[in-house]
Image 1 (spheres, chains in turn purple, red):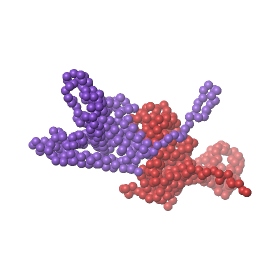
Image 2 (image 1 turned 45 degrees about the vertical axis):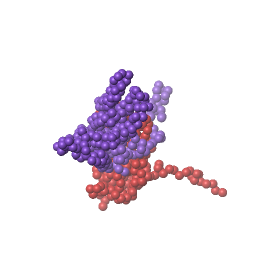
Image 3 (image 1 turned 135 degrees about the vertical axis):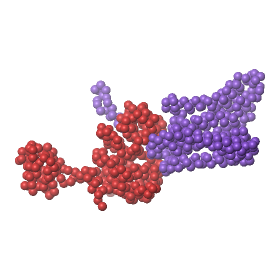
Image 4 (image 1 turned 90 degrees about the horizontal axis):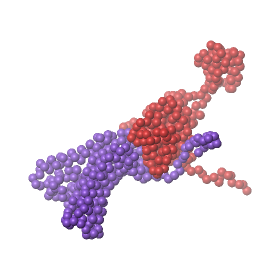
Length: 306
Length: 326
């Protein structure tokens, strides 16, 4: 730093000039993590106006309400005759279904973290950094995955810890009776989060307009589900049909049931009652959808594959 | 016994800082649709400020993308700051800054967030990126506007923000693609001043433009390409050599120029009147004696001597001449 005028003349003007950077400098992984953090920050509305914060935080509140109600009832009735009734307001399995409420959040957030990069032509600038197209896809899908997983998993953690603390037979007994939940819930929630993240980001990558990306994602989920329901309704005379598996809204919940029950148990919703191998069909369709989504994403960001 | 020369004790300098800025060997790139953007390009330019000159579609942006490792050449090799791009394209990108020609800024971010973001994406820790963002925004003159959304910036401010994001990670080399495009004269002057200062900071510059005046002003080396072919490359001082023409501006009477041309003709010195006051004198075969002759004749004719200078080739003349050469 050099003084341009003598300090003795009642103040100095400094030319700060240019200071070279000689601190730590990460490579590709650091850049990828940075993009992941930036994706989270943007989706949560951090460092953005209050309007951008409303949806994510409202939805987080909404998906937590059932857990709070469950715990509140259990706590209020813990030393009363009502508390002796072994009621289940909401099971851990059911709570994975509550997370489908996050579909709206994903329909808004995924296009918001993808479309502006293409619309504002920021991609060439991003790929002038030590990042590849695959890093970009990983960071964006990973960001949405982390948010959906977190928003789905945290209420379950709250439910689990709360039920453990108010359990009349003691916390250790509760944990012992619910050990399977410790892997079934994260696995089910992970299946749901991966599905939402890959499909939403892949659909959003096909357009540079956020509104189109969001509507296209909802259409990609709902239209096959409605068609599937119509086919099932037309063919169903008390028996299920394999077309029930095309209900893409329920697909992650079918796999949830595979995880929790070892069989598909949502025949009331998807018309899969009595269909042999429906669990395998759901798993294959899930894997195929994830694979197609990743192929689309690799294609859309192929220009920066090196 | 002979003492070892002092130079022998000095270890060889590291490869990076002394290696050439850009070296290509038989570099050719064709796009999938068959368009050949670069053909057999062989250039080597030293570090410093280098102008990359060519008309629109000459292959400048393609060369930048090849330097950034965003695509690979059809044939030939390319080295940037001494490192082959094909071996480590991602690593190369970590040492470069890039300012694209087109608008590329997210409109809903503040300048501070935007520049810090690109600092983090270049691998800087978050806190360091924010500090660097503050510093470079100050450097490019956006310190007062750092917390305003980029969407509200004027064209000049957006160009400065683009330059700031290119500089935030302290690159070895910054690639500037038409940095003065769309700027008014004042903005252009300020941008050229900024680009001219980068060399003082130890940052090499590759400055792509079709404005030869800009290159002549801030660069010390130039590479000219046309339709994917190399036209000419070299130090600007060497390329813009003297033409052997002395230009003289005189006054004092209405026909001052013509009078001086006639007087020079009597002394067997060829001269041409450009207008009533401006003449070009062919100095070939006369050496510096012609300067004394002009001085004496101006005094004898009672004229006023306003200016006397050796004419140089301009880069425009050089580009046109070389591009038209078969």
